[in-house]
Image 1 (cartoon, one colour):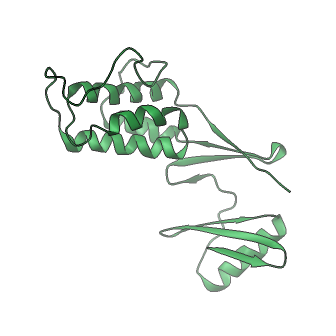
Image 2 (spheres, rainbow, N blue to C red; image 1 turned 120 degrees about the horizontal axis):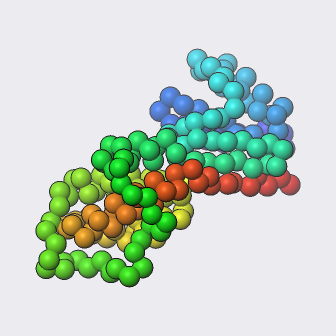
Length: 175
């Protein structure tokens, strides 16, 4: 949803019961929040710090916002039993090639595999473009995954374990 008042533009992102107002200036933000609170039972929680598994680090002095999914990644690694896995420095094996059926690997639980790949997609789209290629490569095998595909997925998780603290920086442009 967006609002146009005078010559300023404001947006309100909505997810279930969370509202995230975005405005060009502090004054416009204050007016927007007041308007929202006139119509809805809302509470101002201050600057955005955390939403949908994404930590938001605001650096107003340099007009930047940092996004990280450190907590979500740690939880994912724990949930899929890779807490003791050895971290690695690349998300995919450049020497390995995934194939639909290698006639060697046994099939794996499709639901488990798809759950892992879906979680990795969420991370890739949210804050980690560095894993997008690797996640796209393993997603192609979601209909009939085998052990080699699962190994490739777990490699991405091992890479995320190594790089959990990476922060995606968004530069805020002002006109």
